[in-house]
Length: 160
Image (cartoon, rainbow, N blue to C red; front, side, top):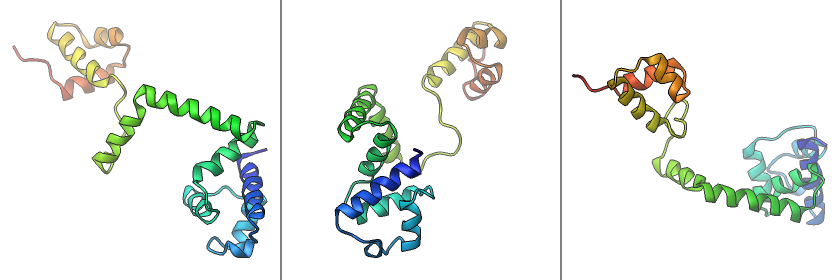
Protein backbone atom coordinates (compact mmCIF):
# COMPACT_ATOMS: atom_id res chain seq x y z
CA UNK A 1 0.00 0.00 0.00
CA UNK A 2 1.49 3.33 -1.01
CA UNK A 3 1.12 6.56 0.96
CA UNK A 4 -1.77 7.93 -1.09
CA UNK A 5 -3.69 4.67 -0.68
CA UNK A 6 -3.07 4.58 3.07
CA UNK A 7 -4.23 8.17 3.43
CA UNK A 8 -7.28 7.33 1.30
CA UNK A 9 -8.32 4.59 3.72
CA UNK A 10 -7.83 6.90 6.72
CA UNK A 11 -9.71 9.87 5.24
CA UNK A 12 -12.60 7.75 4.00
CA UNK A 13 -12.86 5.93 7.33
CA UNK A 14 -12.83 9.12 9.38
CA UNK A 15 -15.30 10.88 7.09
CA UNK A 16 -17.71 7.94 7.20
CA UNK A 17 -17.18 7.47 10.94
CA UNK A 18 -18.18 11.09 11.50
CA UNK A 19 -21.28 10.61 9.35
CA UNK A 20 -20.11 13.06 6.68
CA UNK A 21 -20.74 12.72 2.97
CA UNK A 22 -18.30 13.90 0.32
CA UNK A 23 -20.73 16.75 -0.36
CA UNK A 24 -20.35 17.86 3.28
CA UNK A 25 -16.65 18.46 2.61
CA UNK A 26 -17.17 20.96 -0.16
CA UNK A 27 -14.24 23.29 0.53
CA UNK A 28 -11.89 20.80 -1.12
CA UNK A 29 -14.19 19.90 -3.97
CA UNK A 30 -16.08 16.64 -4.23
CA UNK A 31 -14.18 15.48 -7.31
CA UNK A 32 -10.79 16.12 -5.69
CA UNK A 33 -11.91 14.51 -2.42
CA UNK A 34 -13.13 11.49 -4.39
CA UNK A 35 -9.68 11.12 -6.01
CA UNK A 36 -8.04 11.49 -2.57
CA UNK A 37 -10.30 8.78 -1.12
CA UNK A 38 -9.44 6.45 -4.00
CA UNK A 39 -5.71 7.03 -3.47
CA UNK A 40 -5.32 8.42 -6.97
CA UNK A 41 -3.57 11.65 -6.01
CA UNK A 42 -0.82 12.75 -3.69
CA UNK A 43 -1.91 15.84 -1.85
CA UNK A 44 0.01 18.91 -0.80
CA UNK A 45 0.63 19.76 2.81
CA UNK A 46 -1.80 22.67 2.46
CA UNK A 47 -4.59 20.32 1.36
CA UNK A 48 -3.73 17.90 4.17
CA UNK A 49 -4.00 20.72 6.73
CA UNK A 50 -7.35 21.90 5.28
CA UNK A 51 -8.71 18.36 5.17
CA UNK A 52 -7.63 17.70 8.77
CA UNK A 53 -9.34 20.92 9.87
CA UNK A 54 -12.57 19.87 8.17
CA UNK A 55 -12.38 16.48 9.90
CA UNK A 56 -11.62 18.24 13.21
CA UNK A 57 -8.23 16.54 13.55
CA UNK A 58 -4.62 17.55 13.79
CA UNK A 59 -2.85 16.94 10.44
CA UNK A 60 -0.26 14.88 12.32
CA UNK A 61 -3.01 12.43 13.30
CA UNK A 62 -3.86 11.81 9.64
CA UNK A 63 -0.20 11.29 8.76
CA UNK A 64 0.38 9.03 11.78
CA UNK A 65 -2.62 6.85 10.93
CA UNK A 66 -1.61 6.59 7.26
CA UNK A 67 2.01 5.69 8.05
CA UNK A 68 0.86 3.17 10.66
CA UNK A 69 -1.30 1.48 8.02
CA UNK A 70 1.68 1.37 5.68
CA UNK A 71 3.86 -0.18 8.40
CA UNK A 72 1.13 -2.72 9.27
CA UNK A 73 1.10 -1.51 12.87
CA UNK A 74 -1.66 -0.38 15.18
CA UNK A 75 -2.24 3.33 15.64
CA UNK A 76 -1.08 3.02 19.27
CA UNK A 77 2.18 1.38 18.12
CA UNK A 78 2.59 4.19 15.61
CA UNK A 79 2.06 6.70 18.40
CA UNK A 80 4.73 4.97 20.51
CA UNK A 81 7.13 5.07 17.54
CA UNK A 82 6.44 8.77 17.05
CA UNK A 83 6.83 9.49 20.76
CA UNK A 84 10.27 7.84 20.76
CA UNK A 85 11.33 9.93 17.76
CA UNK A 86 10.14 13.16 19.39
CA UNK A 87 12.03 12.24 22.57
CA UNK A 88 15.22 11.70 20.52
CA UNK A 89 14.69 15.07 18.82
CA UNK A 90 14.28 16.81 22.15
CA UNK A 91 17.28 15.02 23.69
CA UNK A 92 19.47 16.08 20.74
CA UNK A 93 18.32 19.70 21.08
CA UNK A 94 16.88 19.75 17.57
CA UNK A 95 13.65 21.26 18.90
CA UNK A 96 15.65 24.26 20.16
CA UNK A 97 17.31 24.64 16.76
CA UNK A 98 13.90 24.68 15.08
CA UNK A 99 12.60 27.24 17.58
CA UNK A 100 15.61 29.48 16.96
CA UNK A 101 15.02 29.29 13.20
CA UNK A 102 11.42 30.36 13.74
CA UNK A 103 12.50 33.27 15.96
CA UNK A 104 15.06 34.35 13.37
CA UNK A 105 12.33 34.73 10.76
CA UNK A 106 12.96 34.10 7.10
CA UNK A 107 15.61 31.46 6.46
CA UNK A 108 18.79 32.65 4.78
CA UNK A 109 19.32 31.50 1.20
CA UNK A 110 21.61 28.61 0.41
CA UNK A 111 22.50 25.41 2.15
CA UNK A 112 22.63 25.56 5.96
CA UNK A 113 26.00 25.17 7.65
CA UNK A 114 26.79 21.68 8.87
CA UNK A 115 27.12 20.92 12.52
CA UNK A 116 30.69 21.70 13.55
CA UNK A 117 31.34 24.00 10.58
CA UNK A 118 32.31 26.95 12.79
CA UNK A 119 34.77 24.81 14.75
CA UNK A 120 36.25 23.43 11.52
CA UNK A 121 36.64 26.96 10.14
CA UNK A 122 38.51 28.09 13.24
CA UNK A 123 40.73 25.01 13.20
CA UNK A 124 41.48 25.51 9.49
CA UNK A 125 42.52 29.09 10.19
CA UNK A 126 44.70 28.00 13.14
CA UNK A 127 46.40 25.29 11.06
CA UNK A 128 47.01 27.74 8.20
CA UNK A 129 48.62 30.14 10.72
CA UNK A 130 50.90 27.26 11.73
CA UNK A 131 51.98 26.95 8.09
CA UNK A 132 50.05 23.75 7.30
CA UNK A 133 49.18 23.52 3.58
CA UNK A 134 45.52 23.44 2.48
CA UNK A 135 45.84 19.84 1.25
CA UNK A 136 46.98 18.67 4.68
CA UNK A 137 44.36 20.77 6.50
CA UNK A 138 41.68 19.14 4.35
CA UNK A 139 43.02 15.67 5.16
CA UNK A 140 43.24 16.36 8.90
CA UNK A 141 39.73 17.80 9.11
CA UNK A 142 38.31 15.26 6.63
CA UNK A 143 37.01 18.05 4.41
CA UNK A 144 37.43 18.86 0.76
CA UNK A 145 40.12 21.34 -0.24
CA UNK A 146 37.40 23.60 -1.65
CA UNK A 147 35.66 23.68 1.74
CA UNK A 148 38.92 24.52 3.51
CA UNK A 149 39.60 27.34 1.02
CA UNK A 150 36.06 28.67 1.55
CA UNK A 151 36.60 28.62 5.34
CA UNK A 152 39.93 30.41 4.96
CA UNK A 153 38.38 33.03 2.69
CA UNK A 154 35.66 33.76 5.28
CA UNK A 155 38.07 33.52 8.24
CA UNK A 156 41.50 34.52 6.92
CA UNK A 157 44.47 33.44 9.01
CA UNK A 158 46.26 36.06 11.09
CA UNK A 159 48.66 38.17 9.07
CA UNK A 160 52.28 38.24 10.36
